[in-house]
Image (spheres, rainbow, N blue to C red):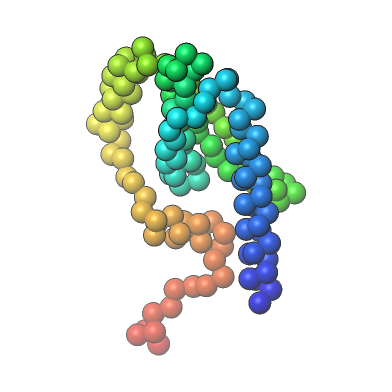
Length: 138
């Protein structure tokens, strides 16, 4: 029962901090109205692809990498890195991105982790209290 209350407490704390983080992120933005947004979760990182509009109703893209970390006191904090991409640069940016992705894939095969792999890795990192037991061997 105690584990459940700890989990609920941490979840509420996380939800509050995440909401505050999202709310405070608007202060960092130049004066751009949100038009469209697509979050992409990838392991411990989340990438946000946000389409914004200028006052002249011209669109641009912000790409934000957000990585959650835990402070020494147990609070969650987020490291964020953001780039602004303007439509006149889309073609060159896309070409450069495709070129470096192809270069990496040629030299180092990309292995995507499944959700099951992430859980296994997380359990291993946290020192899971359970061990794998094959009852057939007993």
